Length: 100
Image 1 (cartoon, rainbow, N blue to C red):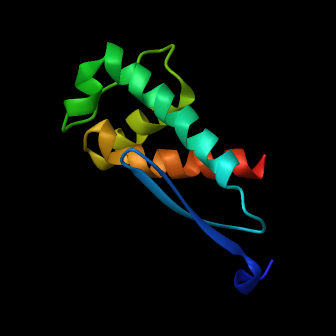
Image 2: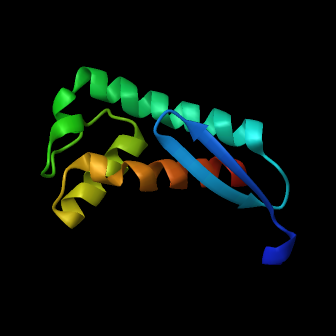
Image 3: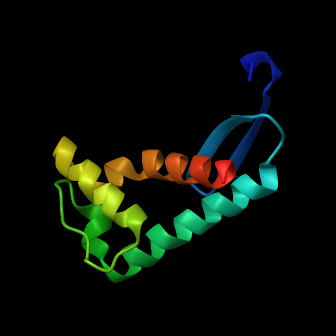
């Protein structure tokens, strides 16, 4: 796939703002994926406020969604709070959903 043949589009949902390049326009699919992953993160934060505000790594609950575990792992590796990983985990989740 050549870069000059890719379609470019933007998806914005609240604080999430993604610029996506794909072989075809996938605006609705990307929007749905963003909303899905944000719902997972927001639901976890509603039950675990510390996850939102911590400036240092914290463990995710054992039964937490894989996205939450990814954020906690990234935070631990970088020695920062888990929300420092939110943009990366959302981008990766959306990319994987679009490739599926």
